[in-house]
Image 1 (cartoon, rainbow, N blue to C red):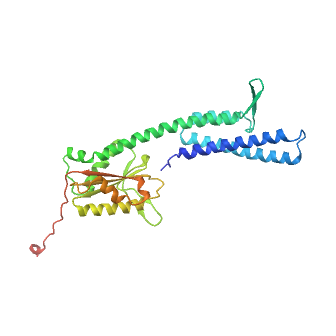
Image 2: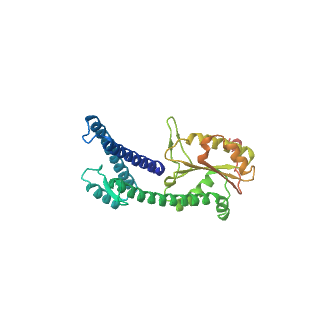
Image 3: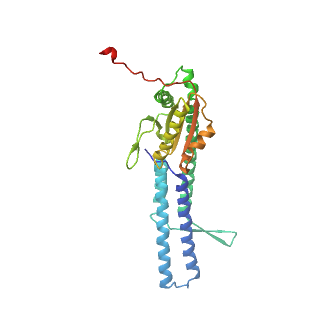
Length: 291
């Protein structure tokens, strides 16, 4: 699965690199201004070191922009960026001077200006993608919250978790093309298998079925185990525990209070559903008449 683009970290690192590059340039300017006309060897070595730092940071910025454009599949912009970089002829540390107010001098980096322009493009694209994902999550949660109504309208009375899982899976499959079931979340010692997943939303769903308070207590224990089992997954970051109850055994607040035992549950959402249902008890087959 393609790992989610963490734009906040990406954005911060670009801003940090720009800040460090500007600091290096200011250091170089300060040394030039306060050194003698004939810069001594020590000052020259310090300038050379700062230029090395500056060149490293600017090249790092170049690679970060290329990564962002490639990740988002913006191939036309990537080519335009590469063409613009080529015009520098390898001299990314070049700075230019402008005069304003008739006497004030303003120094700027054409390369950093270019980086800022493409960073803004990436920002716009990411905001659009995040907006689409938020919309998809709202649709997902709306479908899950409608489970009771969906089963009722189809005349389905569930007798086991599998009956509910099947209908949820069928509905989600039509809404989200990357819906899967019985997939594995890999851990060091053991692999865990959630009921349903939507890969592009990094969302996994567990379905529980309770016909009594004792059933519900078992469901809660199972959810607590799932919370610990799935914690730390890099591919699955959002989890839903859908609890289908045949009676309102407990309120939503009571369920959340009992399940929310650790900080890691912030990645989980509890969805209680109340609807018709019962468990079909397995009948014992007598062997007396078979003898």
